[in-house]
Length: 95
Image (cartoon, rainbow, N blue to C red; front, side, top):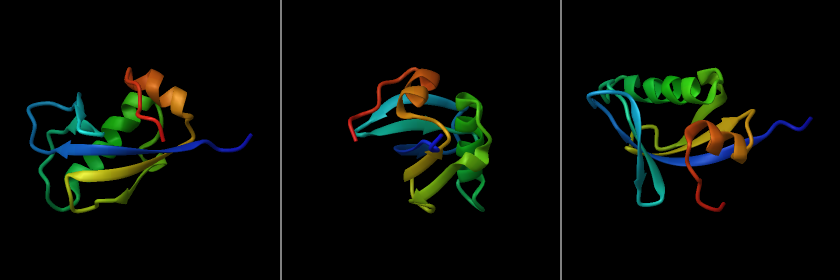
């Protein structure tokens, strides 16, 4: 089986009151995490939170753009586009 991988644009809001997916921010999925935005804590938190939501290890979620920005591009491996949509309860924009 060929390993599936998708890319996902997110808008990250650190220091939120709780970890949650909060709809769309333009063409990016808005994700809130409680972690602060320094020393990579918010990046690790978004990888762990989305990993938990998707049922995969955080290591399968790579930040391929936007390491130091709120606007990030993630590469999620091991899941198809349909599996990600189903797990997150959203419809992703067309690639």
